[in-house]
Image 1 (cartoon, rainbow, N blue to C red):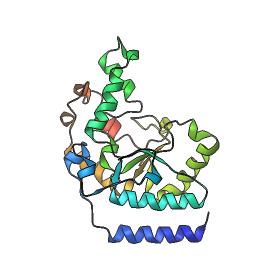
Image 2: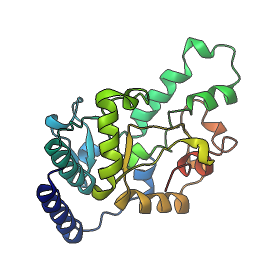
Image 3: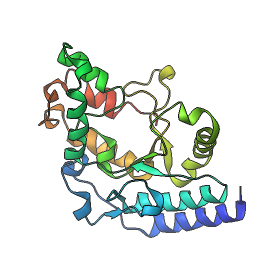
Amino acid sequence: MNYAFYIHLLAFSLFQALSAPAQHVTKAELLGQFDPSEHPDFVKIDAAYTTKSDIYMRREAYAAFELMYAAAAADGIHLKIISATRNFDYQKGIWERKWGRTRYMGWADFAKAKDILTYSSMPGSSRHHWGTDIDLNALSNDWFSTGEGKQIYDWLTENGPSFGFWQVYTPKDDGRLGYNEEKWHWSYLPLATSYLQTYNDSVQAVDIRRFRGAELADSLRIISDYVNGIER
């Protein structure tokens, strides 16, 4: 690693964190009920950092990612954001496309929802609503186990926390509940940790609604086992 460059970035990151105004979050934002393109605390991700168009992050999380991206590039590691903020409607589209798959014909609704929840969140319960979480490079654990993917994952594991980014969906062999491991999903915890607390204080299962299977949120323990099913 280019340590002088790295130390400079960390110092600048600390300066930004100390000088930036606090970003508050509302219940509606936590449930994804907003348009990030019209929200003053969100910024559009530059095309250099992503494979998508018109995707957004919280300002503070984005500034931290830019610093992490530069440090990774200095070490020959190329990071690409393949998903970031997803509001309720976007997540609803993902959920209901999966809900309608022919492979689920004949399945009971509870079993269907449980299977979808292996990797995908119910609308209103996704960390991607918050603007703090990103998916990087590939949506495959196997890809991050060999070659370039392993180099990227090893770098993120060692260096991501220095920029505030952590893998929250870790292996479940330690008894963690909820989604399966996601080596691609990285969360900016300086904001997301407080957002999770606000979510727990303000959101109930009855708030998770307006999509197919929503009535199962309580029996599936969406908040306790999935929203809170993270490595902290």
